[in-house]
Length: 275
Image (cartoon, rainbow, N blue to C red; front, top):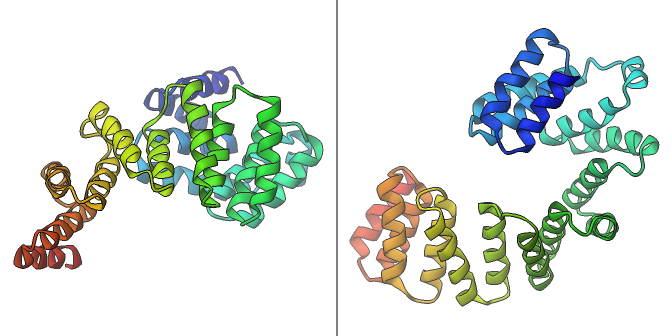
């Protein structure tokens, strides 16, 4: 347990690469540990090792099928871990079934309630998701993750004003991730506030040069939307220079070329995307 706790703390300190060997050491001694396999998949994914993360998740999903009723009686937390594994594997109904059983015994568990909100949102039960998240927000006013989740649900409902409010609250509470700032930009764009979205995304791209092609491409699309073709072209060309096989960036180059009446070049770029 101490070894697992140390690995979990390392992962939560945003040190996924350091957490990977810790989880691997646990699995070497306890190959049946469902939680270790699941958390290993999380650490690998966060560290950018997607293929390895997928294999670890598949192994965790295999272990779920071998969990016995006695195992669940001895360790009810396995219900929650099984739900998380199945959720990440795209098996929402099975994930919800395990989670319902767990919440029946642990109705106040914060992680499980957040998971219930995620499943409700993905199942188009957004009123249920909002009810759970609002309750958590009242109980945990400093929980940035709850604010992000509320923002995501409102964004899915196309209430971009409410989404921006919750994203801003989350940003005030913590050091914002690239993804969170990007979500703020999307919420601003959804309100038709393209100027603010450009400012947000430009600041994000400037602070993290070369780290987020998606953010750069979105910024280029925003420039295109307001008719600033020169700025859009600079952004698209920069992404392609760093990532020559990025089809979204090449497609953006093609759209810009057509907008500038460089039709032959635009056609060649579109053909390159379709090849």
